[in-house]
Length: 432
Picture (spheres, rainbow, N blue to C red):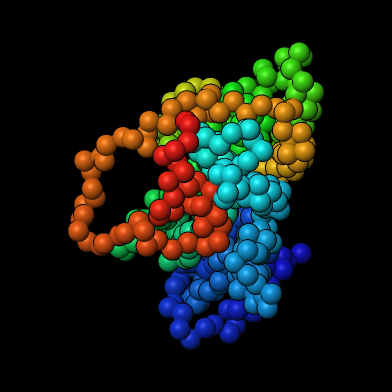
């Protein structure tokens, strides 16, 4: 039985595009699902290559992003982006709105958080909102990096259309013709690193949100996801505290969310991959190549893969695996990376819903969990620090006046609640 994609190929060969350069050695076959692999047909027929458009940001995604919304406002941007990109943001944006609503311009910071206004209350309140915003931003940026990663792989397959040739027992890829061709692995690496960095940053910002919402004794400025969960578990274990039951409920809910958001071990694997691109020497790139004999030649399918044990060095992985193939995951890199984006977004969405519930409980009963401001913001001396010597690489290039900045309504509310607008002396007159 002849495969449907080969039938499409034959039809395309009968009506070649006039602008296609003749190539006797390679034909690109479109595949029904890009994630299943991309095929390059190696043969000896005198024919024109089949050209195809397989951009990662496919027509449906681009259409969703460009669809006009007659009711669009700046306030609804997160909802539009989440829906168009397929990233669940409703949980975190709901928490963002609740926190922003409670930030009080007159009381400075979140008024119900402590009985008296203070500089620490301002700093903790604003950082809590900034981190919730940072979670959503990093998720959107990670999804964009994932789409760019897919698109570079599609471009690379078009590069292979120039001619894959037999060489001994294997196949030789076409030679690069410019520095742009040399950039393919670097562009792939840049988008991969950007994606996993963003996912890690989203979770670390989530850690700070957990610290702020659950009133944990940890610096909200330097918290991360894993440390916040450790402190949450330790604080919840203190049965004598009146707030311990709600913290235990939150601890159990966050643990359940982690278990249901993705397959076993996905988060530790992602941390290993993130560390490998941020702190360590880069791992080598591998591709899985298979050949299928057809009536027209050999269909060569190329699938890029990611390491099975990214926390190990390259040499460690070679020795830990029984064979080279065992050092890699047996799925496309796009499948793995897309799964990480989906699992992280699902975890964040579920955690944000649990945190929003706790936030509402605390707002109704502020004394349930006292906010440890001195622990969450140990020192306010940074605002008195001398101006750093570094003033930029072209310090006179533009004139920026802090009293003439422009921002949206959310930013204006934050400025006023932080007593940071021109002529507001409350910051200087309040306790630390």
